[in-house]
Length: 397
Image: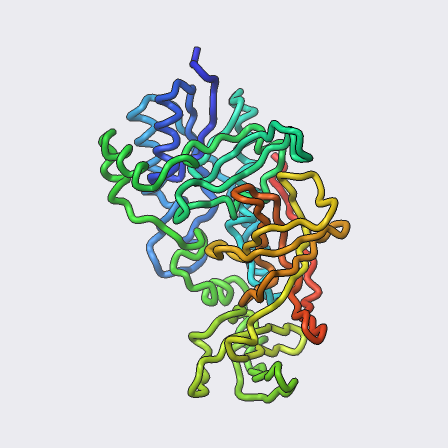
């Protein structure tokens, strides 16, 4: 009998998830390792060698750790479910003129479901991952009492709480995150002490797993035959928000191939920096402006998942992030049914519909959702994409 029970650990083959499995094994858990095969890069037509969590090398690295420590390891093939939910969504969002976040979608709607379903089949009480974040159950007299909450990891440079806002209460109740109280340097030291030097020297991947060459435009072109011809030739529009004027200044390659905030790769020069400030699918227009034109005073967020509180009963002061590496901006949020209205203390640049917004109270994740639209408060000028997040299909088996 194990000291703490049986636990299923998601193992990508990288140093973080491997050390998480080692830690739990040493603490007396009956560990079962599982590597999820989400994508076969060869089928995408890319030119770069397959790397990252789905490569054969990564699967073998995870298996070697399990063999060395004497616990079972399995491979879970979820390529079809991943493709239907994550890749189709990724492609569809760009075609709608939005900027998707596939990693959040995968974490909250694919990987957790897949792990918990397999954990049940293997009689595992809980699951674990190598994310740099913490989980606790609130035990106090506040409205959050009894709820499970994600909070920031202590390593600010590695904190991954942003990508976990969508994990449900039921899933959090069965999840352990062993690395949240450790820094990356400590993880490397632990791997070195145990002789796993190949993990310490292994390069980390920050790419989207199914776009390992980082060329999302090439991926879209391969994924949607004829896309280039269909969307090419739209207008670049230079807008001056101060005067309300707009001017056609050139032709672009197609609205799906641009993102809000983009400066490089526009193929057009003005003698001063210009940025993509809006994308309009209906007219195939890419709107350009100077730095100040990127700023918005607020936004509306939908498809919510609240963690710390069951609902937001009154306006709440938060720090809100609009992208993964965003340090966050003070904001007041208020819930209106299935949506949250956000008003920032100061303007935030390059808010992209389709990205995730995450609300923090101190280190705790209040919850998050998907950005529908952003707006400028002055003059009541509103940038509205009409964005409604489609339903996400989870694994049903």
